Length: 347
Length: 200
Image 1 (cartoon, helix red, strand yellow):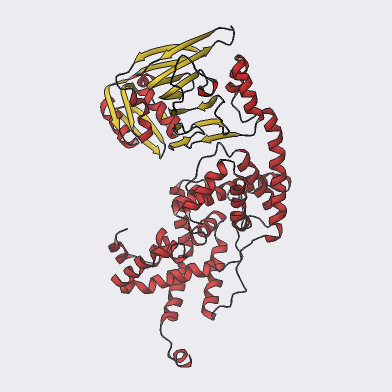
Image 2 (image 1 turned 120 degrees about the vertical axis):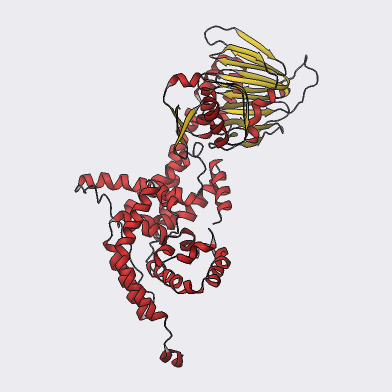
C-alpha cells in the first residue's frame, strides 16, 4: 500500500482496510511503526483513525463463549470415536491402495513381504498437496523427491538384510543408494523395489523418474540400470524389461506400451525445481500436468485442441509463463475463471 | 500461534503424530466453541459438530491438503458441520426461509466497566449490528473480531470475494447513519475537556 493513498481516507475507508483492521485489533504489532508513520505524514488523519479504532474496540467488547466445562469430555469422545474407526481399518487395510494387494497376490515374494508390511506397525506414508514438492529420505538414505498430489508408502524399519520396497501413487524421482557392486550376485538386502500401479521396478543404485497416471505409468532412467518386472495376473509368466540410461518407457496393465531413447532424460525430473519442461508436447500432456500435480481445473472448448502439438522445447518456471507460451504458440485464448480454473478455446 | 508453527503442527498431524493432533484440539477448542456459539445456543449441538470435525480430520489426515491458515480451515469446516446439523434439526421443527437460513448473534460483555461515552457507543453499535441480516453480521464479526481479510472471509463462508465486498458495503451502508452519529459523538469525546483535566 502506498502511503499517499491514506491522504484521502475517510472513516469508512479505514474500516474497510484489511491491514488497518488487523492492526486495530492488535493482530499485527509489527505494523505499529507503519501506522505511526501514516500519522506523522498525515497528522490530520489521526482523529478519524482514533475513531475507527474506537468503533472496532467497542464492537469487540463481546462475551466469548469458551465452554471450558466440556473440553475434556469432548476430547474423550473424540478419542473413543477415532479408536473405533481405526481398529477395523488396521485389519482391512483400508488405507492401502488396491493395487498393492493385487501385487501381493501375484508373486510369492511380494506377498510375503507385503503381508509383513500389513502386519507390522511400521507403515509410513508421505502425501504431498497440490503444488508441493517434498524430499523423503528413506531409512537407507536413498532420497525420493515427491511431486504434488502424490503418495509414497514404505516401512520405516529397514535393516541391512531386508528387501527395500516402496509403493508409489503419483510421480517421484528416485535417487537410490547403491549398496551392491556385483550386479550378477545380488543379495536380498541389496534389492530395492518400487511398486507402481502398473509395474514393479527393481533398482540397483540409480536415479530415475516414475510417473503413475490414470491410464499408464512411465519411467525415465537417468543413471544406472533398472529391471521392470511385468507380472501378468492371468498367467504365471513374468516379463522383464531392462532399462539403461536415457531410456523412457510407458507401461499399462502390466504391458510395455512404448519405449524410446531420450536425448535429455533429466528433463523428466524438471519438476523437482518447479520448472516446466516439455519437448514436442501435446496440449493434453500439459493439461494433465496442471490438473494432476497442481490441482487445476481445465476446460477445453473443443476436444480436438488437446491433440495440438507444440514443436520444440518449452522450458519455463511458472504456470503463468507456461500458459502464456501455450496461448501464443497454439493461438489459444486462456480465460482465467478463478485462481485454478481456466478455459481454453480457439482464438 | 505463528503461521510457521501452525504449519509444522499441521504437517506433523498429517504424518499421524497424535500429540500434534491433540495440540490442534487444545489450541482451537475455545475458538471453535466461541464461533459456533454465534450460530446457535445449543451447546450440545456445537460439541457434536466439533466432535465430527475432529474425527473426520484424523480419519482423512493423509489426504488433506495443507491450508494457508489452519484456523480459517477449521472455521470453515465447523461452519459446514454445524449447518448440516442445524438443517436436519430445523427439518424436524420448522423450516426457515432461504434468506434467513441461519442466525448470527453476538452477546456483549457487560462486565467491562466503561466510560459513559464508551458505554453509549457500545449500545449504539450493539443495536445497529444486531439489526443486520445474519450474513452481514457474520462478516462484521469475522472482520472486526477475528481480523480476517475479505478473501479469508470468502473462504470461511464459502462465498465469492465479490459477494463479500457486496455484503460488507451493504452492512456499512446500514451502519452509516450510526457511524455519522458516532463520529459526532467521538468528535466531542476527542475535544479536550478542561474540567476533567483539572480533576485528574
